[in-house]
Length: 243
Image (cartoon, rainbow, N blue to C red; front, side, top):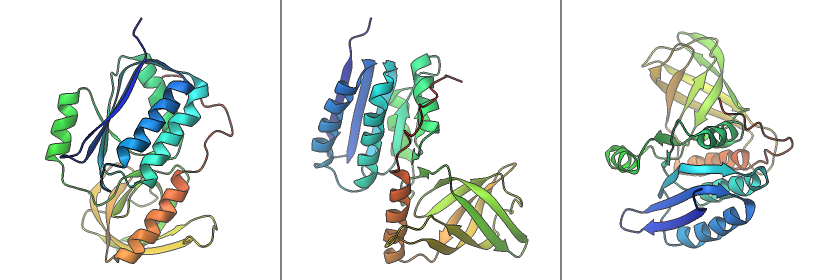
């Protein structure tokens, strides 16, 4: 049986945080990791990258999941940038963790199968200008020269969003005006009107880049998205059945 191991360490030169979880992980282990993350992030600049290796994780006990979410939220509050998660697709526990994170509001990581692949991905990527968040309840309505529609937001950042289940899939290069309505929570912004252009399409959706956003609005939008991402997801017992 693999020994439980949790570790957080920093590469200051790369502005990168490495998190490793292996063996059977319980709530006390994750609380220890949370403490290590807090100390580690203090040495990093906003936009820091994260490599999270869960490929040898055998189990995260259900009681530890709120702490796991607390670590996710801490990274978001301190403006983490790109996050890469190393998984083993044949590992049942990895699939359980993926099932859990698919049910909550969180960041949208990249998935790779090795530490080497993680490094290659990060070194070759063009910065997005903001972490991608997966907010399960958001929708967007939009008007364009091609017509009007509505869609579910699959991921969103301060620089753009991806949508699915679109009533009208817009072609690449189409400019549109979008509207996102958030639940009322003053003083955070509640109604967002923005201009965007379509940069990619899929069978039932598209990806868009936001246009003409000021730095002040970017900060307001990030605070609103951060609030949504950090909302509790533990009103019911999470389904950890692997797909």
